[in-house]
Image (cartoon, rainbow, N blue to C red; front, side):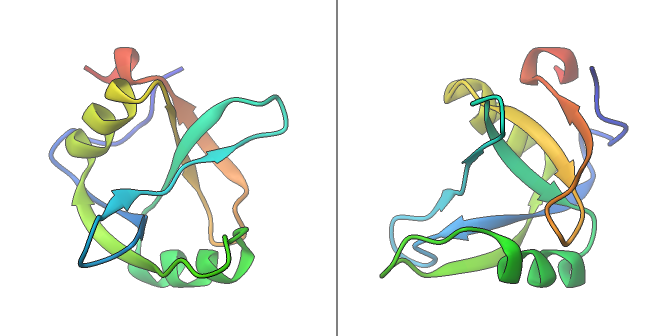
Length: 100
């Protein structure tokens, strides 16, 4: 399945360890698939922070990122990319290979 997002579009993702060892935050869905969640707006991203599971002691921040960069990171780390809403519900999903 492919995502309906242009490669050069800005999306929002959750970053762990902002400002130091920053990396995109990934999760596992109910089937055990590792994915990077992306959101369309910063407001949705901020809302998502309240619903997502967190590791104690780790800071998280929502940041804007070019969709193509998310796809590249996902491909390098064996992840899918899911467009989610602020409650973490999956709206669309895609594999990095389908986007490139």
